[in-house]
Every structure is written in structure tokens, then in C-alpha cells.
Length: 311
Image 1 (cartoon, one colour):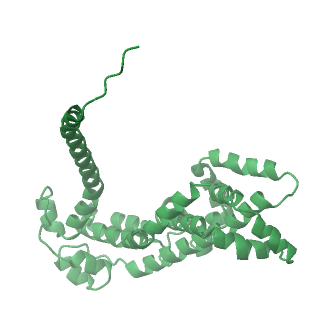
Image 2: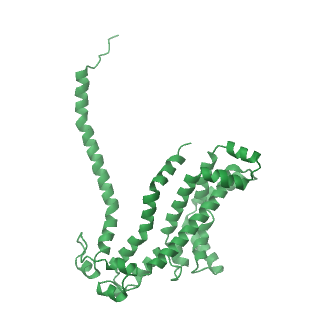
Image 3: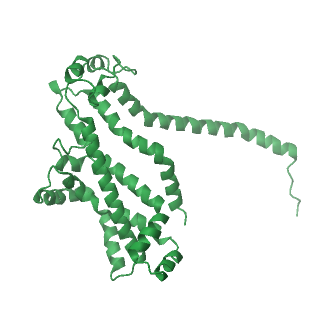
């Protein structure tokens, strides 16, 4: 059998030298693709900011300019209630009052209550499916999973009829009720994590006389802090961005949320031409709380996702 040829150091170095330019080209191409994706993602935000910093009159006369046309902060000041309607009209705005702080408070209240309620009740249901033994447990859980296949739009009309019959149209409880208790995805998500928690601490707590709720509150929830927090943030953001349901049952001024308020603002501007700078200013201000959440909680959120993926 012939001896295998052993590469000499010079030959190895030559191969490494030939691979060098190819690796550099691949790396450069990857950076170019990444930069392009970042640009595609961020450009709509820049365009909204450019529109908000322009005046309506100058914007309509030069709509393709990449820079703010007739630079002004009037749209942001009008959205925040810092200038009068007359000053807003003089700056080229619609002059319509946009009660940003009221809508922001309504949105924060609704999103917080839905996130807290859905996370809490879903966690309790997930603990029951993961740890407790009762008749037809697996069958009931299968029914919950099957409901994931039902499109959400199918439930809009039955929920609306129920809320209408309860007299909850244009009330906070009418907006909050459908998402307050639990969701199949939330239960499934937390149940999978609860199944991976070691049972030794639970057994020790039972020996010491702890009940199911005390075990859930003192042992399970602290150990599942990351996934529970992640679920709460996702639910909060989803509710913050929701439009259809609040539009159907919460169009009154006193309970109107930001997504509905922006839609109404666009439809009620004079002369049939939307106040684009004012609309973009309100949209950017409405997105600030979500950006703050991602800035301060994004790392914790990603760590939670990685942690839940490892058994």
C-alpha cells in the first residue's frame, strides 16, 4: 500500500494564502447584505421622522426630498399639546387637537391589564396541566391546542355580540375582557417550561406542608421568572399594537387607544388631505414606549429565549 503524501509546511501556507481572499470576499459580502437589511428596516422610521419634521404645505410641494422640507417641530408640539390649534394651523398643520397623553394613558392601562391578567392566568393553567393530575387532563389540553388552529378573526363577531349584550361597548372592560384571562399559546409555552423544572423542590415543599398555590407562588414562578417575563412583554406589545378590536368596541374619546386615535386623526383632517406630518409625529410618539422596552429589556428577553431553548 502506497504511503500517503504528507503536505509540507510550504504547501499548507500556500493553501491558506489562496483561501484568504475568498474568506475576505465572503465576509465583505455578508457585511454588505447585513447593511442592506438594516437600511431596509430603518428607512421607514427615517421617512416617518422626515415627514413629521416637515410642514404640510412644503411637503406637498416637494414630496420626494429625502430631507425635511420646511423644518419644524410644530407637529410634535401639536401632538403633545404644547401649542394651540391656531399655532398649529399657522405652521401648516390641520389644527385638530390630538390628545396624546390621554390616548397614551388609555393604551398603557389596557395593555398592562391584559398582559398581567393573561400572563397570570395562563401561568396558573400551565402549572395545572404540567404538575397536577386530574381526570381528562390530557384531553382538555389537546382541546386547548386545537383552538390554536382557529383564526382569531373568526371570534371577533361572537365576542362583539357578547360585549354588546353585556353593555360594555366603549368601556375599558369591553376592550380588555377577550384577552384578559388566558390564551392557548401562552398556556402551551409556559407548560413546556414547567415540565422541565426539577420536582425535588416541590416534593420537599409538600413534605413541609405547602399547598399547590404556595408551591406555585414561592417555587414555580421564581424559577420561571424569565419565560413569564418574556410572555408578559410579548403580550403587552401585541396588545399595544392591536387595532381591530379596540376600534370596534372602544371608539369613544374617553377610552380611545393610540392605534384607534391615529386612525380617527387621519380620517378627520380637513379638505380630504391627511395631515401627514401630524400623523407621522403621533405615530413616532406612539412607538417610543415599545422602543424603550426593547432598549432596556431586549437583552433580558433574548437571554430568556435562549434559556428556554436549553433543557
